[in-house]
Length: 279
Image (cartoon, rainbow, N blue to C red; front, side, top):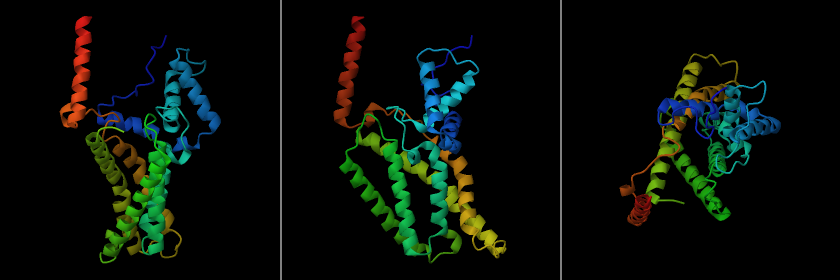
């Protein structure tokens, strides 16, 4: 009889970088976005039944159960179990960022184009953040609206300012602890920058070389779709590899928290010690 496994724990060691890479390669698999509602519910049923102790259905193997779990992880919220908005799912990251990044590095010469794609990019980011928010920390609608407006306006001001500088350069250069929150935000920012860098930097270099050789001279329509395909290629690998830079659950030393939280933690630890002595 096949030994039962804990599906609440990823099959790869999440304390190791390559273990996290393998996990994110499955959850960001863009093919999962094409799964129908029927397929998603079927996968969820397989996973839930196995977690309850049922035997693996006839005709299926443990590997099939794992594949069903990969699909569930890519489409359902890990805490609430609710089906996520399709464009906010991890499986939508590659195709959506492929489109956005490709268009941002292609249509940057006019102010309306910069404004539209920066707005589109920030709107997508807001959707992803809202969809993947903590299920135990509800976000009031007014807070969501304020964050969206600030992020969008900030991105537009930055992009328009940088766009003026880029025009002078060669074409090719074109609810928790606040301390813990800052660390989390820094980690997200770094991973997002590194995730976008290959598509934003390498693909324009490749396109510049192609255009200088005149390979697209008779295909005026080709640069934009080719740019998007190049961005998609880089994002397919960069997305899981950058998502895996940090563990999904990262510990933080108590002595690095705010004084009031340190006191609360000390009281909690003292209570645990008291109860243990009584056992």
